[in-house]
Each structure stands twice: as C-alpha cells, then as structure tokens.
Length: 41
Length: 545
Image (cartoon, rainbow over all chains, first blue to last red; front, side, top):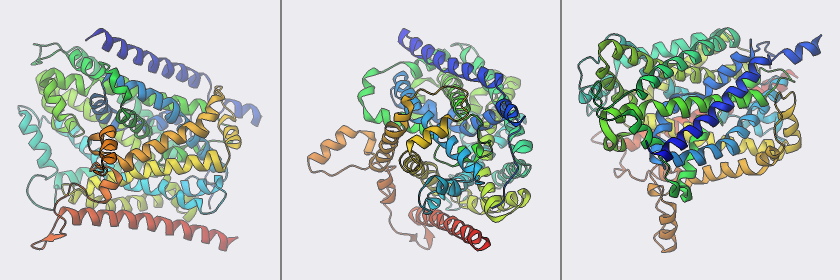
C-alpha cells in the first residue's frame, strides 16, 4: 500500500472508531431511564 | 387512535435496533463499489462531510419528529407529519413513510432470502469444486434468470423467500421489546463477529498463499488511494451524499417509528449520534475490508474494475472462499451470508414496524393481525419482483421506492421541521433531555445546509447526466445539443431513455417496457391506496369525536 493510502485509511478508521467508542461508552454509562426514574420518583 | 404501551426494553437495545435499521446490505456491497468508482480514498472526504452536514442532522430531525409524534400517539409518519406541519395535508406527505417501507420490503425480503439460502448452500457444500463461471451460473439458475422466458419461476428461491418473510412476520408479531429488540441484540453482535472473522482472514491473505494472486492490501490500496483531483468533480460529491443518505436509512419513516416509542424527555442527541456512527463503523471499517480485498487478492484489479457491484457478493464470493479449503470455505460462506442476513433482517424489521404501527394506531388492529396483514400485502407486492425480476420489475421497485421516494420524503420533512414547525421549536425538541451537548452551529446547519444538500441530491437525481459528467453536460447544453440525461436519472427513467423497443407486446408476449410501466402503475396504485387508507383513518377519528 502507498503511504497516502495508509494515511487515508488509518485516519478515517481512527476518526470513526473514536466516535463510536466515545458515544458507546456514554450510552452504556447512562441508561435511558436513569433521568426518568429520578423524575418519576 | 389506540395508545400503545409498547416501549424499548433497554437503551442498548434501542441503539442496536436503530443501528440495525441503518446497517444493511448496502454497507457491504454498495459502499466499496461507490468508493472504488468515485475517487478511491478521496471519496471518504465528501463522504464524511456529507455525514456531518446531512446524515447526522437528518438523523436528529427524524428522531425528534418521531419522539414528538409518539407523545401524541402517532407511531407512523402520517400522524407525525401532521403534528409538525401546520396543515392537515401534511399527513399525506407522511404516506411516503408507509409506502417506501412497503415497497422496499417487497424486494428487500427477497434479497434477504437469497442470503438465507446461501447460508444453507454454504453449509451443505453446494459450491464445493465449482468454478467462477459455475458459481455465477448457480446464482442465475437459483433466480431462474437467463432462460429466455419473460416470467421467472424460481421454486427454491420462492420457498426461501416465504421462510424469510415468515421470520420477519413472526418477529414483528412479538412486538418491540420481545421481538425487534431481541432480534437486534442477537443480529448486530453476530454481524460484528462474522465481519471481524472475515476481515481478519481477508487482511491476512498474501500472494501465493491459498491460491491468492495478490496481497489483500493491494485491494485496500485500490480502495483507499486518494485521487484528490476528483474532489472538484460534482459527481463525486453527489455520489458521496447519495451514499450517506441511503446508508443511514433516512427518509423512510423507520427512524421516526422507532423513536416514537421513547418518552418525552428521553435523550435523542446521543442515541442518534451513537447509532449513526455505529453504521459508519460497519460500513467504512468492516464493509471496506471484506469484498474488495478478498476479490482483488484472487481476481486482480482489472476484473474488479469491470465487475464491482451488487451481484458480486453472490456470484463471486462463494467461489473465492473455496480457496480456503472445504471447512474454512463453509465457515466463511456461513459468516459472509450470515452477516448479510443479519444486516438485512434488522433493516427489514425496521421497515415492517411503521406499517404495523399504522394498522395498530389508526385501525385498532392488534399486533398479530397487523403482522398477518403486513405479510399478506408483502406477499402480493413481492410477486412482480420475483416473477418479473429479469424484465426489470425488481429494479423499478428499487428505483422508485429505494431512491426517489426517500429523497422526496427527506426533503419535505426537513422543510416541515426547520421551516414550518420552526427551527427554534425544532432545536428545543432535539436538545430536550440530551445526554450530549450539540454545538449550536447545527441549528443553522439544519435550517440551511442540510436542506441544500438534499436539494443537491434531489436535483442531481433528476438531472443526472450521462456518465455523471456534469461539466460535459453543461457544455453540451450551451452548444445547443440538449441535456444528455443518464438512463438512471429520474427524467431518464420516466422517459425510458435507453430502451429502444417501445411496443408493449410482440407476438402477444409482453415486452420489458410493458412490465416497467405496469410496475410503475402498481407502485402508484399502492401509494394512492395508502393515501386513501390515511384519509379513511382520519375520517373515522372525526366521526368518533
């Protein structure tokens, strides 16, 4: 693979994986009904 | 209207169902082909720009319209569109949100059934010892095409279609939490496992090993090598915007429907972003690492350039797996087609749910009866796609439901949301209960930039020039030679450009143009029938009040 292809691929993968992991960690840490259950109480 | 008590069982289940809705066959078969044909690595730049400026905003809008509608007892697009529009006529725009799902399901479940049958064929060793040509012929024989007959009657394919349809109807009849959510919780992780297995195998293919003539990285290089000069070509931008649009399953009414089962203050900002980025992971990272590297390793670049496309997944991949020995070939076949089946079924369930919700909300049908009614309608609509596959009925369904309607609905919904419902109210709707802070710039993106992107995609589809060469087309126009419409542009399709035989029958046998026109008539009739069903449902409500 050429250097430019490597850079293109790895940069894209890094951006995509960063956001997937970032958002999924938040999703797992904050269950959907957390805020609701506090309000319901 | 009946107020359903259905809710999502868990947040992760909701995200997986939403991501499963977006992740479809196109992630593995369409994205690599689009990237290869549109500038390789440079394609990813307009692709990601389109994702940020059109894809993510559209997802948030649809989640917001859905949650807003759900609070008012609507779980399908007609009621939701009326609740954000200022006129009751907006409910007829919502008809697109039912029509699109029904019409796409009619052919999508058929493709899904191919993947199911190919899992079976891989398991039973049906491809063992077959050449490229023989595997390709196997596919033609399976669909009963290439026989010279005007009607295709593929008995085996019909049986597998009925099986796939039954699976969908059964899961949908179990409801949201016990059906769709459980299916997504099983399907999405399985898809990732299958994808990871194949990606590892693909990326470790070296020239000279297991029959490979090239390193797999040659395929990756082909896919990712940036051709920056292509960035100035509008064709590349339109292709990238189109790919983002179609991969996220926006403009269909499915996102709206799933979001309608949320509560008033449930987050949609983080959920929408998480589901959208997960789709990107599956498409860009997994989808880009499978079909092209494997095919280039065995068949070389020139072959790929000529043959890259949708059917390659069925006509070519089973033969390539044979190079890995009988056991690994069977495992790879099961993984590849199992992955496609998981991607397909999570999407088809998402498309079935809005139609079911319409029957339940507006006609008071219970879940079981809604599911059976949906199954019956799909059976009728699918028949032309199966029997006249080769004559183009399948393609017509895909074009008018899977391309045209999506763009029209998305364009109208963003006008309704940002300009009629109002961007201030819309922004408040998107950010209420948000678990992430959305940058305020997106307020302006939603009001101005995303609609412009959609207008560009729509105008691009209507006037797409031959070969996608816009500069040459404008030059032709300025020189008085007219506009060279592409055969797959909306105008080109309406005018049947590229079809030379205009007679409907030759010696009593229907021609392709007859089948195409009848298919369009069927689709139009379906749209009108849904509009009438919406009208009658609202009249029933008025009488009850």
